[in-house]
Amino acid sequence: MASRTHQLTVGRPPRGTFGTIVETLESVWGRRELIMRLTLTAIRRRGADSVLGHVWWILDPALQMLVYTVLVTFIRQRSQPDFPLFIFVALLPWKWFSSALGTASESIRKHDKVLRQIAFPQITLPIANVVESVFEFCVGLIPLFVLYIFYPGHLTAWVFALPLIIIVQLLVTIPFAIILSAINVFYRDIGNSLTHVLRLWFYLSPSLYSIETMRNMVKNHPPLDFVVSLNPFTWIFTGYRDVLFEGRAPDLVPLLALSVISILFTFVSIHIFRRMALSFVKVL
Image 1 (cartoon, rainbow, N blue to C red):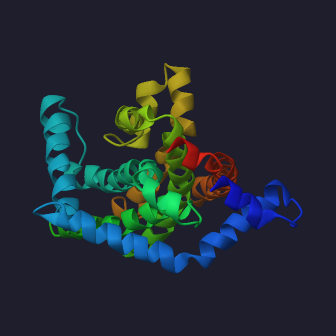
Image 2: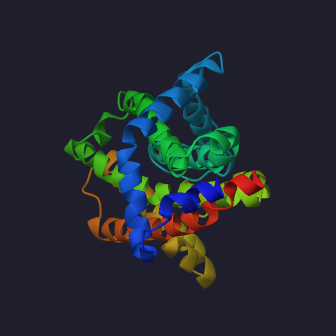
């Protein structure tokens, strides 16, 4: 594979870091049909692997909602009006993020035989997993809107701003998926530790509590307060709750800043992926 790559680039002047990133983006766009085929295949396979199939994307966040409702409302006795809707608005996007990273981190290793036989942009594999997770997230929106039957006062016209928050989360998810898929080829403990890292990340985000409550909880611990401010899901969860729970406009400034940073991070992740991809076949 390595010799074939060199043959393809013979006679072509080096494009540099920026040129390499542009070339990768062009190749991904040119293989968009391949990405959709990989996505549909993964969706069908995952649905066939379990009895309930994609219904788990409805049941799983609903069961988590019940667990956290009991934990926060009854055991810890913290007051949060309409807590089931409040927590569900955070659980659903977090399941999307954690599921996307979990599947993307294994995407290169799971297709090792294909990589040895066919030359194609390997970066399409983690991207296809991210696209698949978007589809599953949309399935998970069904129980969310069912909850509005019990909490109709939270449903306002600002729900139509939901795609904006989804796009921001998608921009955040892509670079993490790309980098983890490459690193996991060389350091296979990444997949084992990812679950624990994501669990800690979830609790360091305003998931169980509002951003105001969490600020009060960490105000006497400056390092934690700093982590909360840098956490992208501080602003993603707040954005979702603004449009789905509070019924108001999202704060666009942090979301815009997060989008710009994520796009830059995506360029960096593509560069890292391309450099590491040269050794994939040797390691696999």
